[in-house]
Length: 236
Image 1 (cartoon, rainbow, N blue to C red):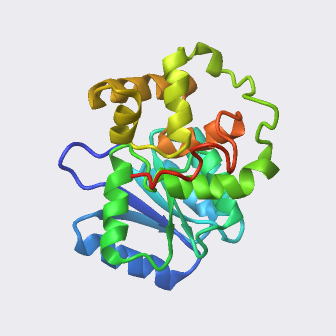
Image 2 (cartoon, rainbow, N blue to C red):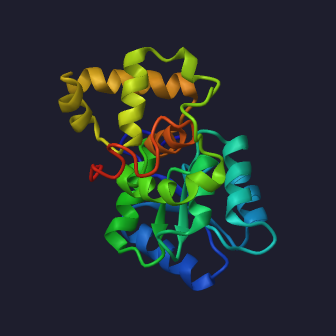
């Protein structure tokens, strides 16, 4: 559920460190973003998300009782319109890949600047992915092979057969990290046409955002780690 146009996103902060929760609350509140609740572990995050129905959850990965990965999966299963931003200490944390696969809309380092934190929350609330596809791609390239990525050509994901040849081409380029503007230039299409293709791909494959599209492109073998175009684009 994204906030109504012009309204402040409603945020739930889940982290086992009180100082981090307090700091993030102060940062977001000072920038006009509403923090509706806090949670000190994953189980509490799930319960509070169910009760408060936030637009965005800031989710730490390592928490007691239930970790952020399981909490992310449960929250998005129960509240699919919610957006989850993963909080991590390391920019190549192996758990982040699992979280993106579970439907998280991106990740933030805990030393994020106040301005970036607020901008990130507002961005994912619009339904977009937070991180540039190039960052997602860096994670996927490191961990996809150990997570079952296809090795012998594109695998038969349930929805790939429903894609037109053009949509399959667009998905492959999404997986390589191209923005809509770069896609339009690469395929000699208008940006509006590219946006229509992307929207249809997301609908057919039940994808939440571009981060999931990158993960899927690698897992199905449409894009290979280190293959042609992988890592060539700076993303958005």
